[in-house]
Image 1 (cartoon, rainbow, N blue to C red):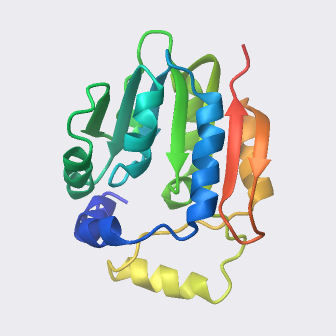
Image 2 (cartoon, rainbow, N blue to C red; image 1 turned 90 degrees about the vertical axis):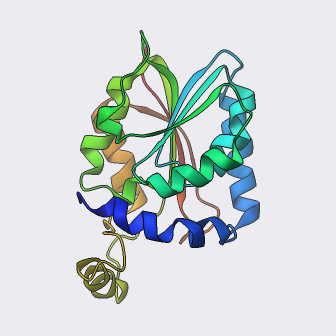
Length: 204
């Protein structure tokens, strides 16, 4: 996992040129996220990639910190987001993010939880960095078993051609969030094979 940043550095320019797989679903996730955010919010997004979501949502809040492990991804993001004074891009892993006093109001994680070595640990880290009543908004690809893709993805990772992908289903993801202490406020999946969008709240 220590070298995952090298894969994403290599992929950054191609990733930036790639269109969103389901634009309508992405716009609906943005709409649902905007409904949660308020102008005074202090927001963290980890695994921000080339910053498209951060750039879109930063005008909705007071402060937006977007992090990623890839320097190349962040370089592209900074170029796109130049001029947005309340938006910062920093190369940090989630466990290295220091929250503001009292915690973040909201933490976003789009297309990242299935790429982490331990989703339960990441969810616990999110919980710890949120203020009481804070919101965790995520969109996660869930492949319960992987089928024929599993050996392909495994081999691709060993060769340095693909990132490691973890396999779990939406119910397992929800259970992991509940085990960490979150209350699920919304669960949305536009199609059975699409990423699952969750809005979870840390209790007061």
